[in-house]
Length: 203
Ligand SMILES: Cc1cc2nc3c(=O)[nH]c(=O)nc-3n(C[C@H](O)[C@H](O)[C@H](O)COP(=O)(O)O)c2cc1C
Image (cartoon, rainbow, N blue to C red):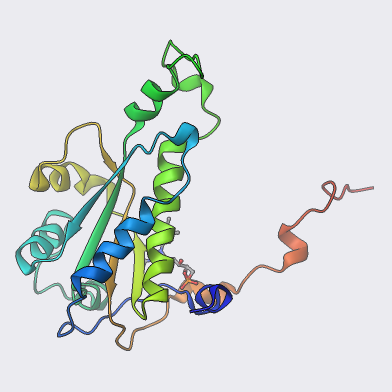
């Protein structure tokens, strides 16, 4: 698919055909593309938990707070996804990388970091998977793991303490879904968000 077409078609898809598994080669491609994401100092402080068996997916939904007979239609439709990918950020990998001689932050202090690059880079990787899914004729949705369930999620999948899930991607062949009510907000106009040269002053 042409790149501009991928961007045009991209949207969060919240329902999937549960009878159509994703070919393993396609899953591999999504993950290979994730590893092409940029990362500060080429730290690559990320990991990806791939859940494709019914047991693993059920364990995910149960650990993050929804039961199989969840009345909320959002959960019901999202649980149709044949694939879940949880991108996890690894802050310590960045602190260690930037303590190396070419960077020199040997105190490993977080004060040097203007924003948490470990989460940003892992988010870039998630976006690459999201776009790759569109390119493969699939849909996907990035959503947050409720903060009060993160500990249970980590226990359920044996995630080491120092890895933090930044969210989750559902992936699958698209089925009719409800658009988010947030979309009523509309895309903000270019003039409102883009500042050429300098921020327009008040006078
Ligand atoms: C960081 C982040 C967190 C999000 N969390 C959720 C979520 O918890 N549930 C959900 O349905 N969508 C979630 N979304 C999707 C947004 O609602 C969606 O991107 C936005 O409404 C614009 O719609 P579009 O991506 O389909 O264009 C999230 C998106 C991002 C980037």
